[in-house]
Image (cartoon, rainbow, N blue to C red):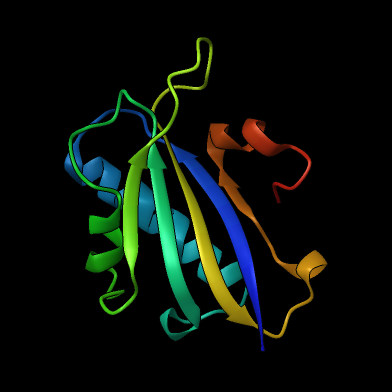
Length: 120
């Protein structure tokens, strides 16, 4: 097994805890599904949120999905003028047999514009 990193992002419609939980849950579920992973394959997960999101911790959505024994951390993205608002990003370190080129990064909805080169 190799250690790889998988990226992803999702844009929220509004800064509300329930909505954040739903969208981040959707993002994590897609990351796992598209890469044939289970929570046991996760080593650690970093979440970042744009400064306009402060209603909850994105990591709370991971805990709600049952990801309870994986180190999680949240941070704030840089406040760059003109950046896409209300975005949660994820960087997950995983154990996988996939080659680096076969890792499937997940950018949902309008967040696909962030990385057109790797978004599926």
